[in-house]
Image (spheres, rainbow, N blue to C red):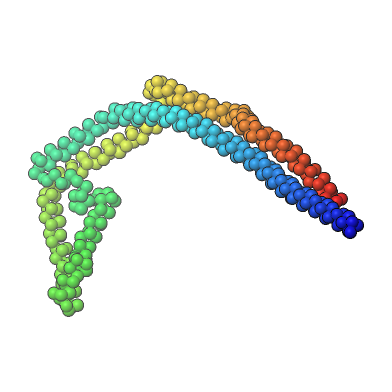
Length: 340
């Protein structure tokens, strides 16, 4: 009986020992899982920090590029506005000189043609006197009259031909366009309608012919007067041609050295120098921007970005150290469990 109790006690001790050992193994497995979980978390954190560092680098690079672009555009825009204003001032002075030049040429032309223009006034008054003394209408002194009743030049003859064609076109337009429907209703027979149209033509030519003959007889009752009017008109036309010739010659010969543009020339020269100076300053400013300012922007933004990356690097070192510790504990525990 006593031996049985001893054996039972031994069995109980073995069972307790096995249970304790099992509990210890379960605890180690849980600890191993926790360590693995922590290791994975730290690896994820390390990956996140690496991505954050890349983002900081990219943001810094983008910021440098955008800042350089904006600063350069602002610099160019500022100088362009200044140059544009200077160019505008220069244009104002140049226009002032051009206006002054045109005024001087007009005055010179007026001076050179004054006598001829006065002569034309006298000739026109002489024509009025001749017409008045001979009881002739004023329209005789017109290109329209001369072209139709006494043409002497090719231009006047062409004008007369055009006038005759217009006279012939009037009945055509009336017959075939304006009153076409009315004529068809009034004269449905084509032959009768054609006769009517011919009569309209003949009537038009007859009436116009009578008017032309009446004016011709009225105005040519004194041929010597009409001849004198033509001579006076020719004198006026010759004077006009002379005036045009003088205008052309005056414009060609009116060089700047014939007038005093000293003040305006100085202002123009000063304006050109001002524009050129601003263009040179812009060029120098852009070169300085490329050689100095760009590097300064890159340095400042880079320093700010470096602070953020250094903080990330420090945090990554801490994570790596912590990860190494956890990895070591994990491996040691795993070997311990394997060895029993």
